[in-house]
Length: 406
Image 1 (tube, rainbow, N blue to C red):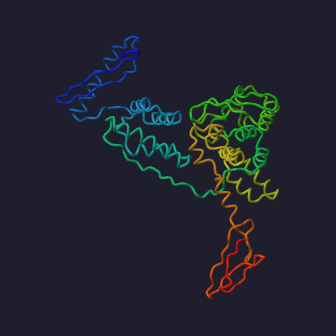
Image 2: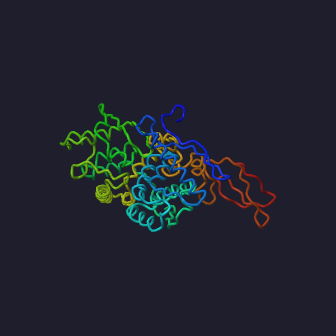
């Protein structure tokens, strides 16, 4: 035992010939539990045997992938989303010895798991699995990280539409949506929340006072909880949903088209994919009827996550908030992510310079608002081109040429 801790530890030095290996490891056993000391002694003997096999006979320990992955989680202490993905790896390879993990098993897992996800998601999962295997190699559980063909993802340049809606477009989209989807879209529109953190909220997470309200997000992607205000527009739609459309006793705030709570998809998206696509098609038709053909093409590309981009861009372009303030309002942990992926704006100093350029002037006229001295250039005939009182160009002889200070 260590001072101030109720856990049992393996502390000591194992000497093999001229080599010595210092051991300081926790057994994870509580000293107050029955038979804890006997179990710790069994772990000590097993650990000494592993060290003997590794350093004398050059044999790798027969460690299961689950044990190594759990050790990786304990030492690295990753965030919630990373830990969830590592748990998926444990469920797939937990009973396999990590030294026997080969290319075929890794390829089969990613083909099945990432069948309906974007390439950037698969790239992230492959990078995380590589981190676990690299940890295993450094800890001596495997000689080298097994190879498998990993995907390469380049930045997409096909979607040139800025992910921001014009005033009235989201309102029209909500009007075209089904009754069960309207309150969820209103919440995403007013708070910039992700679909995954909003779709499973309960009624107790909402409080209303007059035309205003608040919503509590107990579970987010970054592991933090947030309390955020609600716009009166969203409050009106949410109250209408509770008073007129709900006749059930489900504690969940949002229900699917069948009147049941949305299923938990283990962190994956797709809860409202078909319902949003139907609402979007109706909205595009309405926009074309109203004459907004160009904006209808932009709306056709929209996804539910565009609500989050729209929230950040509105705060930036309309209210002038910086990335740190937007990250606080939109529940981002890192303001750099907001600056890089979500907001699109022109710097103020650059806008002032580019909007005052002397563009659109006719030949022979002085750009308005300029008080600079204009000196005409010399012509090939020994004369100069100058401006008269009306600002038009005229040719003078060299001895008559001067400087026009208008």
